[in-house]
Image (cartoon, rainbow over all chains, first blue to last red; front, top):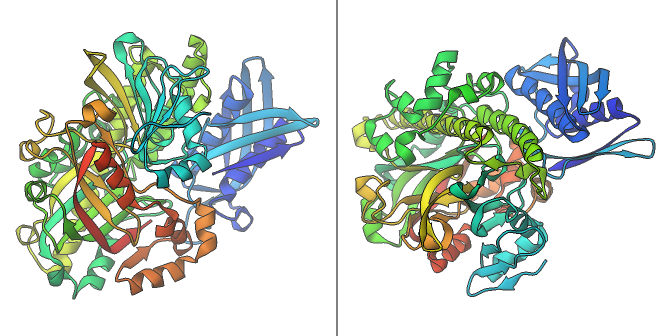
Length: 130
Length: 478
């Protein structure tokens, strides 16, 4: 399965893509915002940055049992061949309150992955392994 | 893209563009229709671009759309000729596979307490999101599992030496390199050993419905009316993270090497390169975790049977028929163009199917060939096949791996709710225990192809032969 996301800029796109990915599995709006965590990712082009970003979020979800409510990318450094993003996120640790509404996402994929400038912003197409 | 019918159950995609070899799909006129709809054939053509590929880029009858490779894809590359390995040719669930336990019990001995039995199996098996496994591993034990595979479990009293004899590679693939597995991957794997996961993974209690090949069934100790248990799962988070890490690493390597690939998920590197050697070491390690995972789960199932039926292990006879992966890449020798070559054989949603006499098979299967376990879907039959020697020339000793999806998860859930499906299956005599009822419909029988058609094609083509059909009576899902 996959999704297409749009952002007014690259930061907006990364945040939207993160929320889109987790929305397959659960409703972000009902997650209690009682914990926070930080996320960093880097890539050497737009696609590898998106792949690393989503991979890092999934690792925190699976290994740290963190359920994301919202994600804010607060710093983006873009040098040729070196793109870095830092973000903070709110949410809760996985507990009995958690209601799964869709399949668990195992990983983002590079299959058909595109991140392209569009209408003054950015558009991404992402396929996920579930 | 041109698709030519090339004999019964064979469809050829002639080499074009950057393809280095033809594509070859083994499937029937009935099953090819779906493959044409979901762009899986395009993926067969894409795989044919891999450097060093020999023979054809193949697909088994259960072909459907995947990521990079199609599910059901088989591709072999010549190691000495710069052939590559691609993590996309193994998939995210490294070492995912199936094991079948036979029992000494007939269905008539189990049918009475069966509701309690399936409840006990469900209670004994951690599953679903965040599910911690039966064993929480220390950092040191994670590394041992990655090297020793199912043997790690057996040496701690979880199972028997006989189990290892009936596992592919004796329960542990050689060449595993724990140092090639990231700390992130290990942190995902440490708490999850002995857990089922979600999605299409399951534990089924089944009954042997019909035996088609009596000598092979005897060698596998299968008989009509017999209760069996099938376990389908893989390497959980440690495999997903390892594939994630290695696709990124080999994507960089591919671009550095100037490889032109039609899909970045086909990222790859020559088998002899440091990047590929690292991947193969990490992949073998994750595959060993998958084998240990199925070993630990099997012991959980055995315990549930013992408690509910108040029977000793000897009386139950829950012995392993075979454990085999269907997501893996292995270095194997095949004759290509009249010359014996070492090939890197990728099987993504395809199963190794060695014929009789292959030295890698346990003694008990030397005369009949390797058991191949083919899960159906809830409500439809599963099959036990046996490998044929002819498969070496036909498909690099490969055959199908399952029924293969027919409709998307969303399409499946729109047709029926999980509760309705559970009730419908109960009326058919199949008890389902699901962790997440609303996800159950995603795995409904109508969402999958007819496994009987898939295995019939494999038999007609000569890759494998059907030994027995098993019908489900109880299903435990994540």
